[in-house]
Image (cartoon, rainbow, N blue to C red; front, side, top):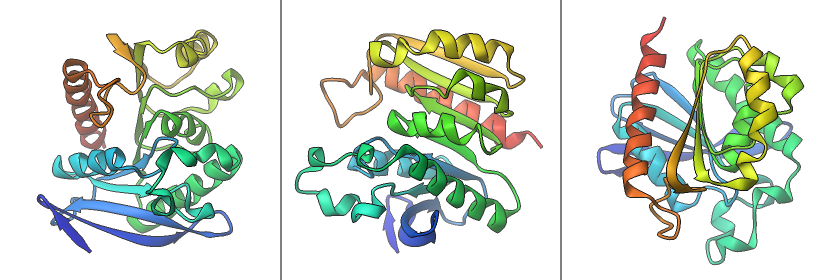
Length: 231
């Protein structure tokens, strides 16, 4: 177990969908019992994603982050050249099945649903996961949504974050937005002006927007607190 700046973290092996997968858990001490299932970006558990998990832990949450590259060795296997591999090398259906397995393990352990938080690819997988499971809520940063016909299965509050200059993702929002407007789940979608995809990533100076990143993070923490305060 590692201790860093007021949080403790460890990597464990949890049951995935028919195979064990690596899972990073980061939490303050003592464990607050408020669990977030976080889904990383397409390059895996890169330093930015670890930093976000630590930030969430310092804010008072236990964070469970499956390494979705586990089936091809795990993110650490590609540390020398992180651009050489992406989660797209594994079928999306496999990712969703692994996430559902970890989600179910959290529910079994805590007898309570976690909150789902995802970034980029992780938000895309998060959208798909919440059509199959009902978490306490979800925070999804610039992710392509599920098929519109699956939106009716979403039954939790969602805070959806978008960048203004992100055509690949934003071009998919119109049909999603129409489906969400008819859904039973409360969804707040916000686009941050003057931003590009991954604008919260302080490890990417070409994308990072400090003002927008600070604003969206404050909104995220506020939303999370509201979710966990709701019985």
